[in-house]
Amino acid sequence: MEEPLTDELLDELLSAPDPQTFANARNIGVRSMSDYLQQLLDEKSLVRAEVIRRAGLNETFGYQIFMGQRGASRNKVLQLAFAMKLTLKEADRLLQAAGVNELYCKNRRDAIIIFCLDRGYDLQKTDEELYRFGEDTIC
Image (tube, rainbow, N blue to C red; front, top):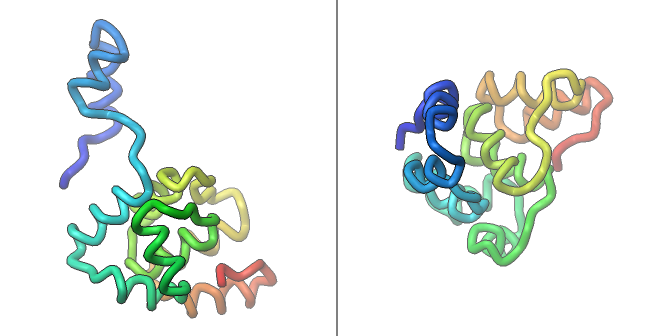
């Protein structure tokens, strides 16, 4: 599903009579992490069990995250992002849906993670890069 550009949405919001009208017209609400994970699975034709395995998560815990029964730490969300081969924008949206901080390029550890996401590194290679620079690994 193609999402509109932020600038386009901002123009619509500012020309709306009130914020509620805009939110209703655009069906804007709080997106749950489990909903966004399901959307990503569908869009990328991924299998949940395979994503959980590639993320290195406990199977039960991984399924609970996907079903919305458990929350996930920022590192667990990043594990899922790498397992799903998300873009930076998708990873930030997933982090936001999880209620944790998005990646921030002025933070050294986050900058390394952003670089690795952009280059398509897997989780193991990313952890190696973080370790090489003396930063806390994701796993």
